[in-house]
Amino acid sequence: MLEQQEGGIERAGSVGPSGSSGPSGGVSRRAVVATGAAVALASAVVGRATTAQAATTADATGAKADAGGLQVGVGKAVFTPAAALLPLDNFTAVHDDLYVRVLLVESGSRRIALAVLDLTSISAEAIALMRDAITAATGIAAANIMVTVTHCFSAPHVQASTSSAGAATYVQNIADATRSAVADAVENLQDAQVGYGSGRADVNVNRNVLTADGYWLGANEQLPSDKGVYVARFNDLDGNPIAVLANYNVQSCVMQDSVMADGTLPISADLAGAAVAHVEAQYPGAVGFWLVGACGDQFPGYRSKRYTIDKDKGWTYGVDLHDAGFALLTAQGERLGNEIVRVAQGIGKYESGKQVVVRLVTDDITTTTVQGPGAAAPAKTATFTPAGTAEVPLWVFQVGQGVFAGVEPELSTTTANAIRASSSFSSTFVMSMFEGGAKNMPDKWNYEHVTYEALDGSYSEGTAEKAAARMGRIIKSLK
Image (cartoon, rainbow, N blue to C red; front, side, top):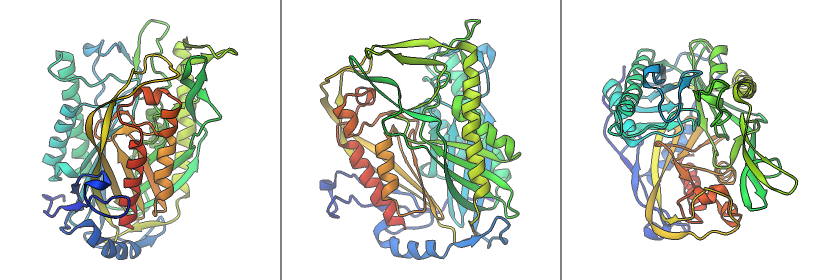
């Protein structure tokens, strides 16, 4: 049974590149949520490392967990707008449903919640309502509730409830679905074990293509594209799957802007939804979670409405397969889903019991925001004018020997690879689009080549590298 969260909040120090603390490191202080603890992160590292090393390892039919050990609960619910609400954000039909999925993870007094929605992004208003619903059902403090989206481009954007009656109903749908999903998660909360694995699927492609007018959107096989499929599987103590989490670098935009033969623009959970639906079909009763990775420079290899480039590097957008595009969606979703299941089936070692470390660390970096020309068309040069400062939040969620590192903006492949390469954990998930999502965080290469990611971003050059370095230091401190 979940109880009201106990007090005790750690804080991450503002560690600079040389290890000194204070403003020189470019990192502001932010709460470190490791429930049940009340000491600084730096002084807790040694004790936590010892705990992590003592984590129980078992096979898929491991022994019963100790009292107060790892517990997991899951739930999902539909929030698709009803036909009466359409058209909404130009969508006029429904192809498949949109879901909110909730994962509860508990170990002793440490309780964390993760909510994932089939959306491009989500408003702060809707997130607040979701957190209220989760806290009311579980007692988990708002600071311990992570909210992220699949970055699906075939779902209506979430507008302010004051903007229209339809928008208000849509926001309420999300809140109601969250309430239903978390109720199910609380009801089936149970002793659990966790294991990790990784594989590879060739579904994504770098979207930066050089045109006669500068870099633009398309499919470029020569530029970086991490094909890694990273999987976490939570089982009950009999080895039956409760939840399967998959991390992959791609935007869910196979059907973006694709209009059907009858003129409708259909709602769909798109690539992420298709992959997760395949996983859930293989594991009845389990819930699949899509954790979008580096999506700032990654498209699906095949899209229904696509960009084309000719021999003279002229580009066009608008070649549309219409209804036939859903065959591409099904095939690519099944390909990803198959690999997720293959990896999940191959996981041989699991951790369970009260020695499984569960903690959530939040921090931020302070950076300069910039105003650029916008991403309306390709450009060979661009001027980015400083526009102020902003804090970029960072999340690091640890469950045993796996760590989940998330940020609000869309990351590039290079940035995600840097975070993963510096990690001391055997399994590292790197995610974009936390806390509702934000525009791109371009790395140095994207700025130098004036890509869509650079034109669409609002953070100064060097921010991505600073975020990756800070994330790496946080992850290393947990081991």
